[in-house]
Amino acid sequence: MQTKEILGVDVGATGIKAGIVDIETGKLVQERIKLPTPKPATPEAVAKVVVDLVAKTGYTGSLMGCGFPSIVRNGVAYSAANIDEGWIGTNIETLLSTATGLDVVSMNDADAAGLSEMRYGKGKGKMGTVMLITIGSGLGSALFTDGHLVRNSEFGHLHLKGWVAEHYVSNTARKNYEMSWPSFGKRFNEYLLHIDRLFSPDLIILGGGISNMFEEFGPHIDPKLNVTTAAMFNQAGIIGAALYAFEAKFGAI
Ligand code: BGC
Image 1 (cartoon, rainbow, N blue to C red):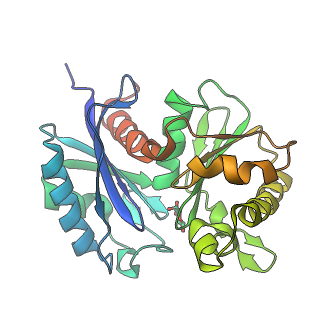
Image 2 (cartoon, protein in one colour):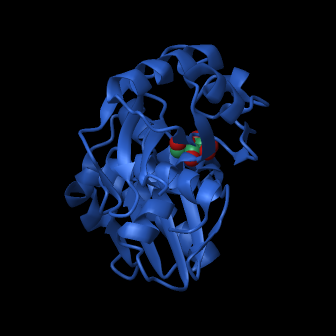
């Protein structure tokens, strides 16, 4: 029988995280491991860190899913907002497979987190338009319609008040402009209202590094919006990447 324990890796702007995921339960079978993202985060440097991470997990299987912070089509990175530009045109799957010896399947990091929430978390069984927004160094997005993923949405790059949205209201923007949580909440509310006007989501799930600060900024979000935080918090990217890799290779679980 095919093993249901798949390695998930989530490449972020500040950290690269890995964990072995039981894709039947959607849970990590051991603590996740995190190493700092190298600077600059060139393909070669990132591949080296991924090799170290794989070794640290002690993974003995052969398949790895990788969430990556860019547009990913057929394993190739097509953008690089928060990662080294050398990634553009790089086949993530070939590079990481050669480096680790594993079979690798990659996808956008926010899409991975969204898949995880739709399968095991707050989006489970939800029809209509569901959107997951990850708040970290950038703003990531995953769009679902009746449970189906519309890949590579980049709603962190919508324009808002003359800004690229993620320059106005990501965690990096919060730090750069020394925003208090209420100020951040007000800006984030403007962003969500813009999203609401464009897509009328039935549910918005917040993930990523600072979704655990929701108690601080959540009170500034318009109550007419149906907003919740990710059940899997910042593990969603690892779990979704592993699930996606499994299903890409072996079909639906
Ligand atoms: C990238 C997205 C990514 C998001 C979160 C954005 O800057 O363009 O592809 O999902 O950051 O990492």
